[in-house]
Length: 451
Image (cartoon, rainbow, N blue to C red; front, side, top):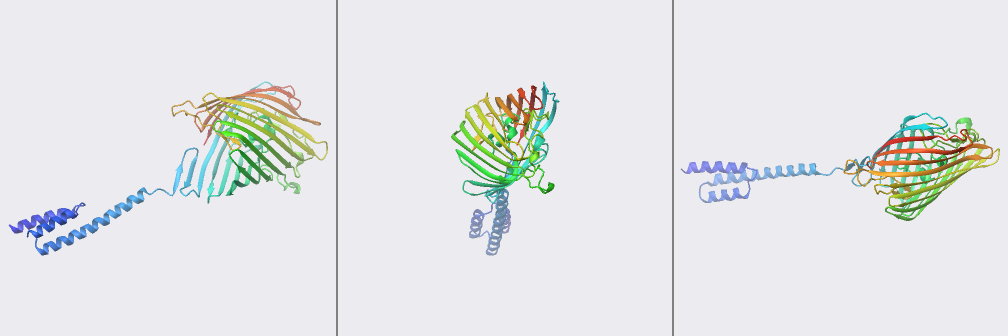
């Protein structure tokens, strides 16, 4: 009888010991059986040893499981975001990389004189890589696969920045000269599909070095620049390439959410180096597909030593209403012949039917974010716009034409990355130049995906 009880107790003990939940209850039961004489001393010692060994094994397995869980739930060293491009960033903030880009597809139809062929084009197809290194260093490299005209295919931005000084940024590489509000705005966020007629005096991009500071209510930037990437360099006839200086300052006495008053002044100087006969100013009638310059100095300009531009700018935002204007004058110096003065200006306004406001940030306007995007229960943002612009390229012996035009625009921001635009441009008057007394008009549309 005693032997049978002992075997039953042993089976019970083994079952409990093999359980993952073996613990103090089993140890208490063993002690009670030993005290009641159901387990002799030898059996008691053996069971105690097995229980101790089983506890050690269970603790090791528990620690292994806890370690595996900790490793599985440990946050990654980097964060990945896909909103507004693909951004990879280390958690300590020392390194970041963003991949973004844009695709703009245009179509246009023309009427009136001169005859301009209807057509379509990929206006821009750009991809860029930007980011930060070791907190204070930054970089950007952008390539355009579909650019046309002076801003043809190839590298657009290629620079590094240093922000280790308080409120001061140093930028070196290929970048925009600091000149003109309209020129500083990204093509993604322009009010119209193309810049105004006054854009003939845009400073463009050049290789150089720039110092800038941006505060809540004012900005200041200035730099020295060589020639553009697309320009003929100094290897031709052993002549030096052109160089320039540029500066722009802005002041926003009112800079609140949905309410802005902006004032600005820019100066840009260019020395032509050994290429004074290649200087020219021209502009299409606020379109790009047709390829016809409605105003153009062509090859009339000769022996140009240097020229400088001065631009004054003003803008305001009050809720869904905004207005913007610029005046630019250009003075040209020549070795032979008298000096010249050309100018141009524009004034534009817009109103958001859906209540949004233009986004203003430290001297420039940025992308529009709809209050409710299509696909998220809304209809996007709808904007109506009107612009008048003029360009005068006639002075003394130079007749590049004097042009006035107005543009009507409708923009639909379906999401913060998708935009659809329609523009009607009517050239009111052309005096002089190749198209004297001719008045073309056009209708063009664009789909834009920018991320």
